Length: 164
Image (cartoon, rainbow, N blue to C red):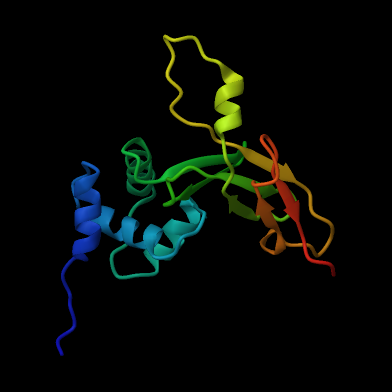
């Protein structure tokens, strides 16, 4: 069986579906970003991509990430003033960020109560709610051990960790 050497047509179509021209550099960036559902910094992506056979410049990477974010293909999260991460999951969800370890975890939570509480004037349209809960974990505790529940009440969610 012959190995495919052309572009990944799924990535080509994904970019085109979002109005992004699928250049070789953009395909490299999209492939690296979507290879694993994760939160990743631009510097981590740059290092990963440039280990391969089609390196990209820092400027190309940042311009492409901004374009992908503007077109709704990725989310840009400013988790603290010195750290921006990108993620391919664009459906409604929130985040918990451990300020000590830099670990970031997704959690699904019902935002309806926030929407109701805002009561925006009619000339405004709510386009999204992004919540980043910042925590400082006890030494040795990892966010990936947490379980998030949003079914415990109208405007609450609960995080729990297994006993050590």
